[in-house]
Image (cartoon, rainbow, N blue to C red; front, top):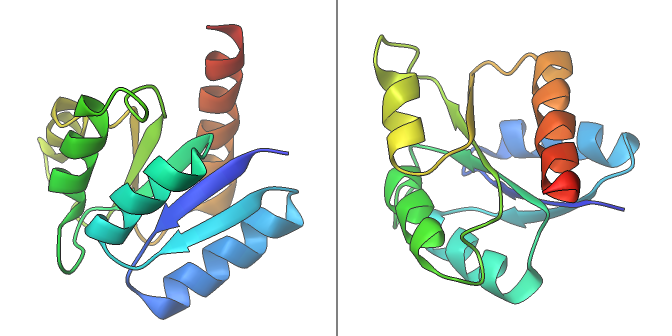
Length: 125
């Protein structure tokens, strides 16, 4: 079973996403800020990280950058979750090390497709 770390400070988003992912058979770990996300990624070694970009304590931009510089976590795929759907935001997410990008409100089936594609890539690489 794949382990997904969900880094999300909004309780409604967190509950909805974690329940739906668990129903699809994923084990879901939860962090409510970027600092906790980095710590959990190090201690739990998830298969994939869903990272909200606007987080308290340490934002998703900084957390993603940190995760990509740590040897133990640099290969974990990160999907940025952001309400910022402005031109250039996708590029900005990819520039800090995110592997993909999903705008909020999240379209679950599309997100699931991205999760499955990245997990399959990781298995074959």
